Length: 493
View (cartoon, rainbow, N blue to C red):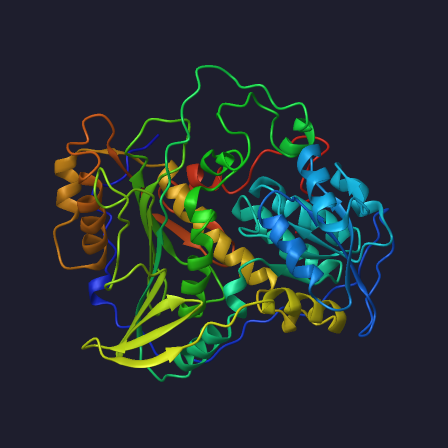
């Protein structure tokens, strides 16, 4: 592999952001639907009952059951999970066992009494499950990130258009009334030009342990169905569920786990309906030696106009022996938008402060059932523009996470002295790199065992959604996964 330059600095220090305009990026007109052997397309009427199946039931799926049950005119007609114990438990807990149960998602798609599916599976199933549902004439609520890679995210968008489906991404902060109000003020010019949007994923992540040999898959889990499009490889993690988040074949690290929420908010603040022109990553996995592969400490910079996005992942506390997580702007916040007039901190609502730290305006939260209700309303109206988190937004925000991870995966360890050189200067990159180095030194004092990984600065063509320039061949090879028959993602482009 080629060696990347040691000083790939972005010229952020000289950027002069242009004014933000109020913009709403809605889906375009749909093409005619095609059957492809699935049940015929059905449009739910304005007053009809919406019949839904929940797919993936362990944690988030369980929450979806509870929320959809509360919405008038919605009936959950089926549950689906490859873990028979979880499937039986959820059916008993919510329906006294009296609900249809499936292990194989394809059986759900064959049902004519299912109008929509809610997908809360592991990440590697999200896009394939969504595209198959669109082909089967079902509307889709798909959890974040909507994709496991950039290419398949675009396939969901194409499928939604081609088969005239309503597809909502599970980035529910888009339905927060307080956040909507702030974004309207921001894009309306109330706070002047935007300078930078910062996403902060400061979530404590302990070691997942390290196994010496492949682990047996529990008998109550259908591993072939769980693996789906990925190779059913030996399981090299102690805990079967959840810890797949930290292994590349299935998860996307905390960028794609928790961070996608904040990433989506940052892109919303920037107001761009496309991907950025450059990306760079710095990070690694520190504090323990385990079977996790993804970074627990990372910063990425996404080179947008009119202003960049900076994203930080910190899974370790600020002190080596304690549990005090990092703070920014005086608190544990998840998004900071810096503007000419001051800065906003928050997520589900928040507060705008002037440049002296004086409170200017508070934006109340207000989420509740809004995101799920919004999905059902769009299912009835048949207007994708009614969605707060239409799948195009889900694809673009998910792709930002993938871009950062691709830079990381192509990176190489950098000696501490060279890393310190990267922290010299007054530009944005030097500032965020220095912050990450200071945090990391608490846990890896000299980096002799494990170096920080500096990813190459990758150029990107937003129109083609492909990498350009140096390292583009290696980066473009990571735009798409290998798919296993019969769980193959259709190429709809």
